[in-house]
Amino acid sequence: MLSSIVSRARLLTVLLVALLFSASLAIAPQAADAAVKKPLDIVKIYYDPPGKDYAKNSLFTKEYIQVKNTGKSTLTLTGYVLRDSGPKKFAFPKGTKLKAGKTLTIRTGKGKNTASTLYWNNKGYVWNNTGDTARTYNAKGKLLESCTYKGGKHPKATKKTVRTTTTTAFC
Image (cartoon, rainbow, N blue to C red):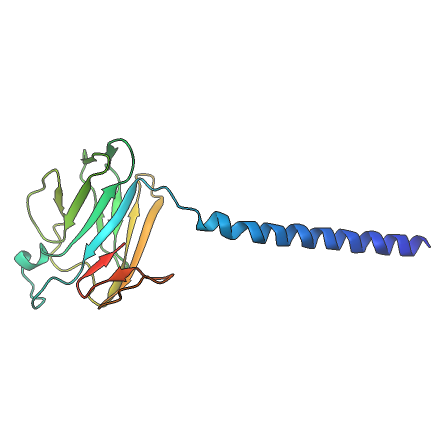
């Protein structure tokens, strides 16, 4: 008799654990699908400007990425970093500020920085025509966003890539 009570208690414990586990799985997808609030949003990557890809600064500056301050106050970008899927890294210049709701363009080539446009000063193209991933990090090194695109025209986003035209990724 005692062994049947112990067996029932074990069975009830196993069932309770299984129920709690399945309940947590049912709740988790809803939390994962919730919108993530990020202060700096990758909006657009112009990865394949028209023409041949010659090694000229005037062509490098046609390639760019745009980020937007999605917050309600000015964002100081000192220490923030932008990376591609390879070794290329752009550190926002000290004192860079972006007002709430405003967009900042980062051009690949060399040029003179303004309030709305920064230059990566890279001696080659950054964003691959066949596809790439852009990532933003805050001053503490925390990943804020990752935007992956495939080259060519992909009018609909998938779970892994964003919508693109033949020249532009929309993150």
